[in-house]
Amino acid sequence: MTRKRMKQRAAVGRLGKLLTRRSRGKCELCGSSDTVRAYELVPYEEDPDPERSLMACGRCREWLEREKADPVDAWFLSEAVWSEEPAVRLAAARMLLVLDDPGNPWIRDTFDATGVDAETGEFRA
Image (cartoon, rainbow, N blue to C red; front, side, top):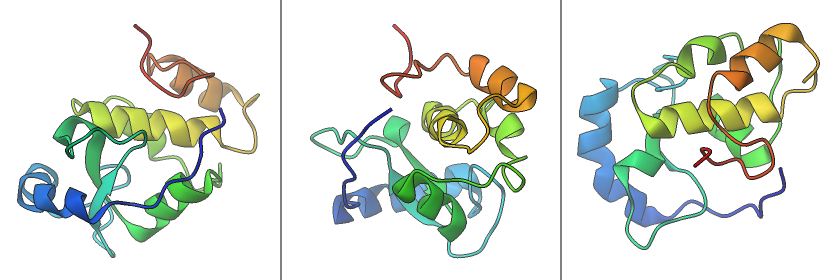
């Protein structure tokens, strides 16, 4: 999956109240409450969309932006892929795609449950 890295838009902050209520002020991926803020998934829509935005902690934002994650610390993704929120499921799937060990059975099985295309990094139609 190759995506151009894009800087987060300040406009996603407009969704802050909605996302904070939805997430109860915690990272929607791992549950951490450290440095949590709104994060928008690329590609960006014209206006920030809650279905493409989530609350993410510093570690999860870094993993999403750098497209690199640690498989040992990524255990929480096996729960995040079952979220009712599309942005959380999509972010979790993208993080699974960049893990260093895609041949690992838990990574492969968890990713397969996401409904995300490995080539495009988007939900399958």
